[in-house]
Amino acid sequence: MKTKSLFVLFFLIGIISLTAQDNCSKFYPMTEGVSMEYTNYNKKGKVEGISSYKVTETNTVDNTTNATMAINLKDEKGKEIYSTDYKLSCTGNMVTLDYESLLPSDMMNQYGDMDIEISGNDIEIPNDLRVGQNLNDANVTMKIGMSGINMNIAVDMLNRKVEKKESVTTPTGTYDCYVVYSENQSKMMMANQVYPSRVWLAEGVGMVKQETYKKNGDLMSSTLLTAYSN
Image (cartoon, rainbow, N blue to C red; front, side, top):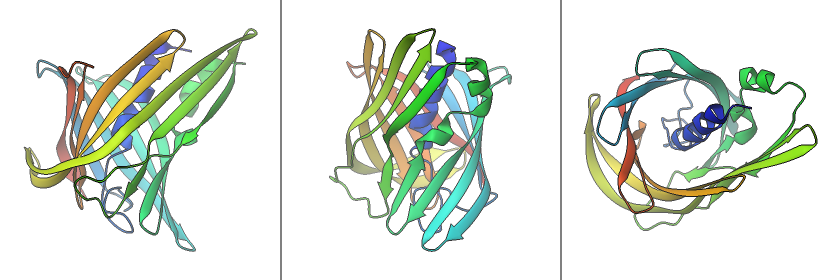
């Protein structure tokens, strides 16, 4: 298993968890053909990569709407470094993310005969976001068995809260956003790190901005919506 691939996966969990569009959800893309492009920057504002998302399939069964989204991540030189699909479902006032689909088949092929188990609690985004609202924690755990040795990797999204509303301007327009704060804790072997994060969400569009910080509050990286098509 490649450590770089794991960190890319964890980065995508943060991004995927808070993108958006319409249908039964205000805060997820559930319409076939919708596409978004995000530019990723380091702490100095230098471009580090481009993330592209597109809804490739939707269907409704009973009262549940399901969607498949394709993801493509390229580095600052345009070289593809990651691609996969993931699943969304929307029922009533709540949207959930299928964590198992975040583990791409091409990455699985690198593991050979390793035994992998993935479990967790979905990230939930209700339609009725309001300032001061506390949101449920979320987590994903991966158990990897190789040559009789087991390795556990966990990512937890803790202390999720809607902090405020704020206007944000991007190359695609100006949006009135909800600002959602969380603390993202990663545990891998003996390493235990916490990265606070804020995401700016606009109704009908989704995530338009994200910032990740060091534990002391210094900016580590940011992401901005730079293209949108429906």
